[in-house]
Length: 321
Image 1 (tube, helix red, strand yellow):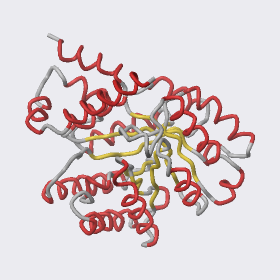
Image 2 (cartoon, one colour; image 1 turned 60 degrees about the horizontal axis):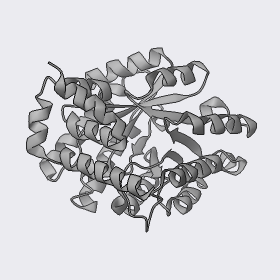
Image 3 (spheres, helix red, strand yellow; image 1 turned 180 degrees about the vertical axis):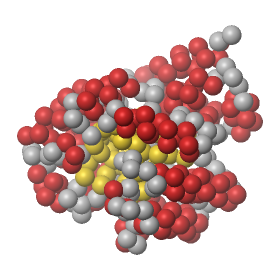
Image 4 (tube, one colour; image 1 turned 30 degrees about the horizontal axis):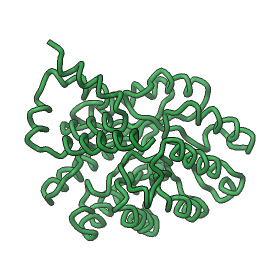
C-alpha cells in the first residue's frame, strides 16, 4: 500500500508540474498530435462550443456544469481574462432554457493573489447571476482546490450566501476536516457537491489509502441522504464515476424518500459517457462538468494525473502519425 501511494503521489505531482510549465503548455496547446486530448475532456475553445455541447447533453436528458479554463494564474491580468470568460459564459447560457450552473475556482478569480481581489471578482460574477431569470436554479458552484485554500474557499462561499448570491460549494471527503464542514453547511441547507478529492495531501490531514478514501466518501454521501439532511433542505450532488458507490447510494435515496430531482450525480466530460447516459435514461438527474477555453492543457493533464491509466491515452496521442 505504501509503495502504491508513493507512486500515485509522485505521478500526481509530476502531472501538476507539467500543468504549470508555461513554455511547455504553449507548445502542447499548438500541437495537432495532442488535439485529441483536448477534444476528449474539453468542449471547445469558446463559449459557443460549450453551449453546443450542453445542448447535445440536454438531448440525452443530461444537465451541465460549465467551467471556463484558466488555472494556475499568477497575475491580475490573467485573472481579469478569466473573469471576463466566466461572465461571457453566464451571459450566453442565461439566454437559454438549459439546466446549467457555473463552476468557479477561487484561485482563477484572484484568491491566490489576495482575498480582496477574489471577493471583488466573486461579487462581480454573483451580481450577474442574480439577474438571470430563475437565478436560484443556476448557482455559482465554488470548486475546491488543494487543502491550503479550504478555509478561504468556505469563507468565500458563506460571504456569497450572505450577499444573496445563489451559490453552492464542493467539499473533498478525503480531508479529515470535511465531516465537520459538511455537517455544519448541509445542516444549514447548503447545496454541496461531494468529491473524493484529487489533490495530493499529507496523511496528517487526509486519508491517503484508496479504501479509506472510498469509505470516507461513502460515509458522507450516506449522511447527505439521511432524513435529517433532507429536512434541512440540503441538496446533495454526488460527483463520482464509481458505479459501486452509486449502486449503494441510489437505493438508499429511494428508501429515504428522496425523489430523483432532489439530488444529482455529476461526472466529467469524456469519462464513462455511456454510463452517464444510462443513468439519465433510468431517470436520475445527471450533470456533466463541461470545460471550455483555449487553455486546455493544465485541466487535461490534471485529469490524467487523477488516474495513471489515462496516461496511455496521452502516449497514444503523442505517438500518432
